[in-house]
Image 1 (cartoon, rainbow, N blue to C red):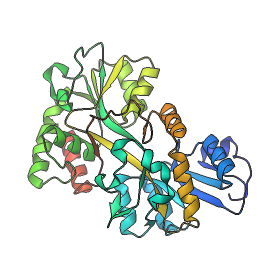
Image 2: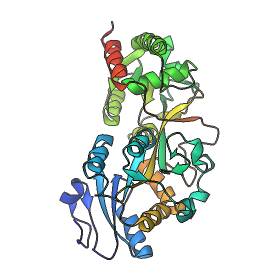
Image 3: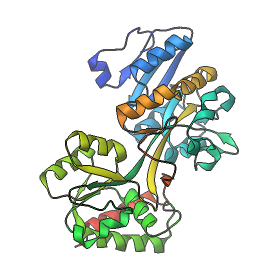
Image 4: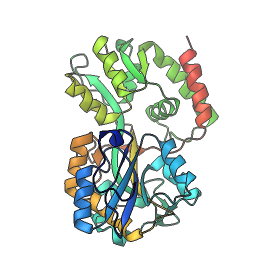
Length: 339
């Protein structure tokens, strides 16, 4: 891939790969679609003289496979969420950032300035992740059917919405958000007793659930063809934006008990060839213009300029690894099978 001057054609784009000219410096980036758009790469190269090769990924497992498979040597920087970052630190696959080389980090939104307050970002006082974009997992409601905007996810259990709720088919997240509605402080590390309690609550929810969905497109299809009042919005503001674009009369709520939220960060691999180039890339992407464009194009929140994804009063609960993913999966299957 290294050495190609122009962005590759549609076939290569579909494969998730594009590249630029070979030069003294070529930064190797592993990212999600929308995190390294061609115009940003072009402007970065023009500004710094550093060329960029980008590989796009489609899952957390794919990121791990690519980084672990090469022991970090195939890429310089990667996008990774807070729930996954500690895994890379444990495996010595990432290196800490020198924040003095990323001056734009000083001007990010207040909730992202003190990285020590974000679980999973640091280890032994060293910073391993630079926040880039985020979204909450909230509640979408039909404004024609739900006249009073809800404030909590607990509305999903309201008997008046029997058979009118769309729920997301995922055991980990369902246990976590339900734990928040029950006032459990840490929804990611549940005791056996708490798991049993949450299981019972989720079984109580079933009469209200019309269907479980796995993708945002599937949820939209079900919504358009059925009487749906509430949607547990796993895809957050991006899901809201797509539904509104399709003509749905819907609005979004960040629940007062806290919104499960993902936060994607830029991390530097242990195989980085040029730490200075990596820092320049991250600093460039923390520009206010890029941040605004990111939110406009994807619907995600950015960490530099305010967006509709969260205001200062919203309680965002950043996703973490859970106590036992397999146990939660087994319990979730039992919940779905329950009468």
